[in-house]
Length: 165
Image (cartoon, rainbow, N blue to C red; front, side, top):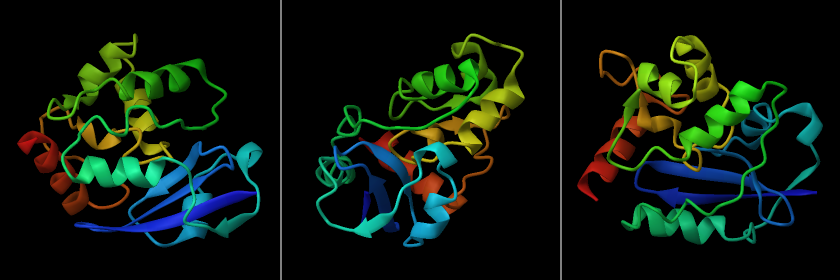
């Protein structure tokens, strides 16, 4: 059984879906749990119920929003991919520091495949645990925001929040 909880944030509702042990399987700036579950790999799907006890992630999100920009670093996530590059790219994504966004080109380079810019972009697009894995810290090669599943105003707010921290 998975659990979900929605937090109010300055940029709208943020919903997390976790395992009983508190590992995050999906997260995003929405209240639409079915939409979040559509991002989860089929091998990680399970019934979901509402429960405010989703482990340490609620407190970590609150702390992050209050200015502790490293509060999310220790949150455990569970995502599935068949490809080794994607798995590694998600690990690298977690190492992108708040206030220091990188371009897709730099992200591909950090991930060990400097010419795999589209694969780096795909790692961002397939990230089911927004905010926890900070895909918002990856920008277009020209430095502009690019896309973000939860909207460019959310991405912009997150980047400004981190730059101010």
